[in-house]
Length: 66
Image (cartoon, rainbow, N blue to C red):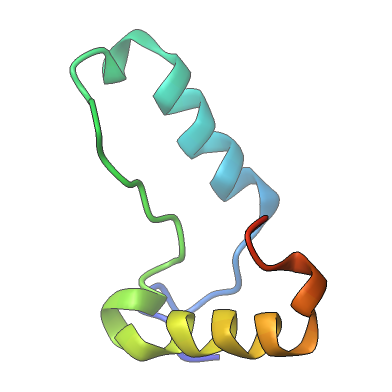
């Protein structure tokens, strides 16, 4: 596991991002992508794209729904 935060993700990490987005703290956030990945994209930018390509190759029925 190579991540900037040196730990595996937990459902609470996503929950905290959702709580932020639905709170008044994010009322001026518009048209942005919030990446909650523990720094994986920052550490290995091609990993996410490669994983998605592999997933879609293995699950052609999911194209267009991801």
